[in-house]
Amino acid sequence: MKKIVISLFLFLLTAPSLSLAAEERNRDTARQIDALMNKALAKYHIPGASLAVVHRGQTIYQESWGTMSDGSAVTADTTFLIGSVSKPLTALAMMMLAEEGKLKLDEPIETYIPWFTYQTDSGKSIAVRHLLEQTSGIGAYDGMKVTDREDRDREKGIAQAAAELSGVKLGHTPGEAYEYNSANYLLLGAIVEAVSGQSFSAFMDTRIFSPLGMNRTAADYESAVRKGFVPGYRSWFGKPVKGEGLYDPSGAPYGYMSSSSADLAKFIKFMLYGGELISEQGLKQLRTPPESNRRYGLGWHFPRSGEKYPYHTGATPEYRSELFIMPEQDLGAVLLMNKYHELEAVAYLSIMEGIRSIMKGENPHLAEMNDSTQWLTLGVVILFAAVSVLSFIRLQRKTAINQPLWVSVGVLSLVLAAALIPLFTYSMGVSWRTVGLFLPDIEFLMQCLIAVLAVHGLVIFLFLAMKRKRQIKRACPKV
Image 1 (spheres, rainbow, N blue to C red):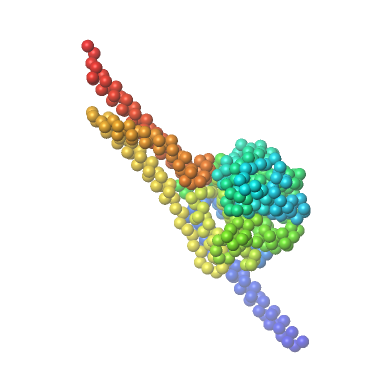
Image 2 (cartoon, rainbow, N blue to C red):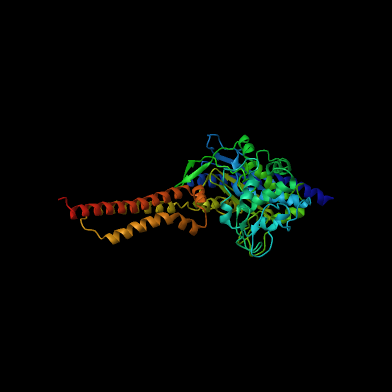
């Protein structure tokens, strides 16, 4: 009894100091995160951002910076498009339906959406699991044809987009190869609607968002606008330019849900500690890394090396997001930003990596934002324009010209002008529309280069024709 009393007395003496030490550590962590974020936002020219960090069941850090495009200050409840961070939420919906017996993950998708067809040489069906794991065999380029579009019906957009994809030719045997493709999650959205009897938006709202208290989260355009959605920013040479607010009515299952950092902190807590939506076994499946040779599980990416934990990045043409959970560290975080450019993606990754470093007690490091591609492309445009002007001057001054040579130069210019976009998109493996959405400055510069080449070729032929006409006049003077 005496030992117990002494132990209790010692605990009461040391508890306040331990509490003060923990508070000081949290304050120091907050100061480091503040410094990192302020530096990152200035370095990357990000107009507005919101960050939440969850540790040991508590939101230990919640801060927002800057403004939205309508001038409003960013807060923890500000609405951002979350891009592909929508995919883990869609995966949660699929797990819920599977546990309710309304679908089976290893059942062919035609069981649930029989109107969707595809061509395959293997005879093997696409299973629901293949869509979740991004191994359906549907090529990313085919997916780009039906994603990130505004021309969809706001009520039937998901089924409409899936119907446009129907008949697709598979590039791989289902389950054979990983190929990240948002169209896989578009089809999962169609399956949710088919088996639940609800619109995707209604299912997500009544079955996931409301139960988790995610009251600022939406999976349709009207609800997003009602909860504060405004256009974000596109990036031109690293600088933010207000966008037009692109929203794909069919895109909620894969990238067009809207949410806030406060709401996504609630989702993080669910993914770390579970709840009533799914069983512990179902939650474990969602958090389980894929086979050793793959890097995508049931709605989540996993690092290729080091500690395996679920994370997802997301992007629309005007917004960028990132969320991770580390169950073994009792840690998770979400970062939302209102600016995006594909060539800045690597730099943005270093922000969240810096957050993880701080939480580990290590020094953070921000990557350089490299806009050399844009400037190099601009240099090429200027160079070709200068060469074209010099060519015109030489042609005008010359009395005798090497016609076959100049004809070849003109033909080459026109051929390059016609082939530049197909060559660029083929080498990059993306559609030209996707280039315009996620690399707007590159699209503009490429169009300028095409115009320079086309004008160069046409003017050469115009000069040659005029010189030929003058030569004929001199050779055949009037009598």
